[in-house]
Image (cartoon, rainbow, N blue to C red):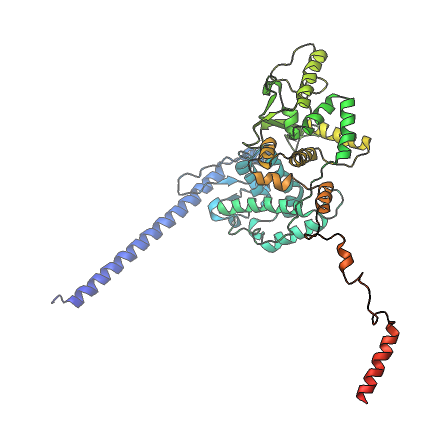
Length: 464
């Protein structure tokens, strides 16, 4: 047989096709082997789980620890925390939640423990936890992730906006709906990234955008009444209010300030910490769910040096002497500048509640304790202090935050500014030159009824 170029081409094509077919078959056999091995490993894992282990897993919360099924070919296996565990249900993160029907409740519990709690501040974790357990999970918790569609989430948000208030059963604010949507959105994004669901159903939902809330500030007259009361009765609680009123410090920063952060020679107070009452165990008995939690300042910019005015330097001198008188010792560096009756930290919630009682007792309009901070910033701007300096005093990293949230025009300032608006020209009485006040002509002095009769006669004559 003569090997012509055509025959050589056909032979090469056949050999190449056989090679491709062989590779496909080999890959298929390997895939089948890996699947069978994974099923065998999973079955062995199920057999190893005893009844006692199952009951323990059913009652304890998800601990976030995976179990390996044998080799890298087998996906990481997690146990569910619901009754599905008792039936040996497992799910593979890379294959999607719809494979084993994992519910939103099961996934959110894992998400909180594995992805949120290790990195979030206590306040951030509480925000996620409260939104999930108070609003989202009671309505959507038992739904499989595969059933969580955009229409379902949209219907849930609509119902919560109308009847989501847990106290009254009425409507929720647009800000509450936005917060709820953000929590559900982040949770579902993580589920999509882990292969638990094909797409995020929250992304396409719509909601009413909340308008910026107007912050209240105290008027000059109200502040004068408050100051008269504070300086006439310098109690331990009033000392905390005075420190906030003339420094712009946050409530948590006021209660967390220690003597070790204060330099009496220069009158400088270094802000490093904040304190708040936070959740410890939401499932614990009443009275044991919260405790005072100290943490670093809110941001890097919040860790700052405050050069206290004379009124506050005098206040701290009084606080120091009173501590010596009450507790028969000098305060050390770890003692608090604003302290309670036993020399410990002042509870921020107690000081905030006391602030409301003071306003009620003095008959002043109610403003939040945090509004003292808004008042400080607004007063500073009105006194001619530049915005960049005020931003540094408040601990803001961006000047726009100060101007947007804390600097508010007051009615007195706007009234004074509008009073200066006048015509550009040298006009003494501008309205006297208008037609309204100008002398009327002889025709305009004729009564309107007479003019109508005159026009009618003129029209008849013209039509003739």
